Amino acid sequence: MKIVHVASELFPYMKTGGLADAVAALGVSLAENGHEVSVFVPGYRAALEHKDAAGAERKLRLKVEMADDFLSGDVRVFSPRKNLKVHLICREEFFDRRNPYGNGERDYEDNADRFIFFCKAVVEMLRLGDLQADVVHCHDWQAALLPLLLREAERRHNVTLALKTIFTIHNIAFQGVFPAKTFARTNLPDELNQMDGLEYYSQINLMKGGILFSDRVTTVSPRYAQEIQTPEFGCGLDGVVQTRADDIVGLLNGVDNSVWNPAVDPLLPARYSAVNLSGKAVCRTELLKRCGFAPDFKGPIFGMVARLTEQKGIDLLLANQDFFLAHEVRFVVLGSGDKRMEQELRDLTAAAPQKVYLCAKLDEAMSHLIEAGSDFFLMPSIFEPCGLNQMYSQVYGTVPIVSRVGGLADTVTDADAEPGRGTGLMCDPNAASLRDALHRALSLAADKPRFAAVQQRAMARDFSWKVAAAGYERLYQDAL
Ligand code: ADP
Image (cartoon, rainbow, N blue to C red; front, side, top):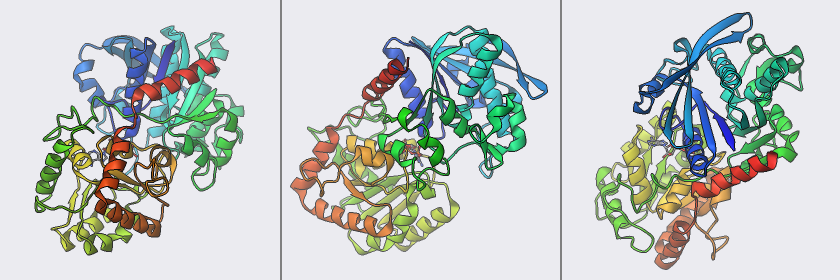
């Protein structure tokens, strides 16, 4: 198949979260399986400066219609591996920036123009480059206009640009909502600016367009596909998602096991596998040292790696801070973000520096060391479209403690509820239920044979992208 992916992030050229990893791993897996894959991303400064882009070929000069203006741009193409082409949509004014969406404080004022331009440029490239895609697969709000723009261009020019379109929701909390006047920039027919189109409470909502006008909709876990049809998780789009209930499917992201694999991980002080866990003990000692704790500590270590946001359940942990003070445990957090949460974690660290450690920055090596050196990994998210860390922790033999939402519920089984199958501990997304899970963790840690059995089951799970990519292949074939 000829498969086109359109996204605002692609590892290693631009990454702010799981989206970049998912698009990259899916693209590579499909290319390895012999499909012809093209990925379109904005030509951000970091992407253009990446060594892979050094020999990029300037394919096309673009004139993109935006309301009454025509904006110029160009497309640069390089191929990082067989069957895989990366197309950078370039326009300095929009994309020659360090950060993709905002300056850290606020989103950029021109985000609507930037991503409408991006989607239109992709359509122009599909048309003028004659790519003849079987499937155009769009990710999140930044690419959500593609299905509408493609069909409009096909109508105007009387051509077929793509047989089917797929839209994947990686996080419904970000929808691309802009003032009503923005609609003119799309040059779409006015009837698409109605309640059954992009219109959304007197504004426009780009993600709504992707959900309504693509041939199939996917989410990054089966449970999330159900959850976003409810007011609790739908962020205002639950009714819209419900209208596509027959066409929506949840496909779990996978783990890139060339990066996240304790048997080969170069970021660890020692490597290990399920049959020989001695390397995990070396990682544990190193982690304790890095945090300034006594290296011979024998009790349970609780680790966490997360953006500090409401989504990740940081407040549920803070509500349970006395747990970490009252018991002989260690608590290590790697993460930055919300300033208030960061300060409260800092205060907790100051209250018990011999037990609690906060590393408030981005640190790839530390994230691997926490996954490997901890006994329990904490991820009590309020909502979680898929989540990667709970899968990493199972692969690394670290028992995840997760809330029963989204991809967490799909990838972890509770060891108390299902003693023969459990790979972790689960709670509801509230402080009392998390407290109960933390106490159950203490009991599990105290029962060495039971802990080892949970750990072995976790390490035996297959979260590889092979499984994930096969799911997408079936979906594409089914849609075609
Ligand atoms: P999300 O995409 O919602 O942030 P995921 O669990 O899907 O959550 O993926 C988060 C990714 O970002 C993981 O690979 C995680 O290890 C990484 N990460 C988060 N915070 C940090 C940090 N401070 N340093 C290093 N890696 C981090």
